[in-house]
Image (cartoon, rainbow, N blue to C red; front, top):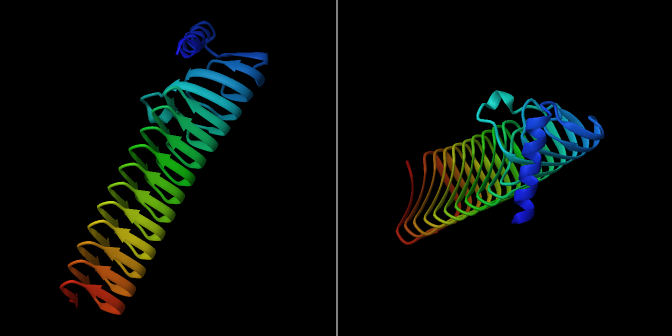
Length: 247
């Protein structure tokens, strides 16, 4: 703990003393302190602003409140003490003691003790202690302690302690402790603790304790404790305690 406090104090000192940052042996590479916008090597900064490109190991402490300052790309290892945030894109390994996030894309191994989020797409191995969310697509191996959500498609292995939801399509192996939902199609192996729902088609193996529903068609093996329903067609093997219907 003392080492972390010392590092934070050192970074603050360089930020205050050198507004453009200090690089050893140069401002483009080596060991850097402060807001160096282009750098290759090991870089320490309190709060990143107007970054262009960082290659190597980038360590930050906090994040700017203004999203317009969160620019550029970090390639390599991003460490947050406590937040690994402040950029448009991060590629590689991102680890935040509290959280990991970007205004654009987050690609690689992304681990946020509380959560991970991106304004656009998240791709790779994604672990959020409480949850994971993306404004675009969410693909790869995704584990959200409470849940995971995406404004676009979700694909791959997806686990949400309470639930998983996609604004677009949902495909792969998906487990939601309470439920799983998609505004589009659901394809693959899908298990919802209480229910599974799709705005479009539901294809594959689907199981839920309570009910399963689709706005269009259901095809495959479907098992629900109470019932299965679709707006257009139910086709395949279906089992429920009560009934199977189509509107």
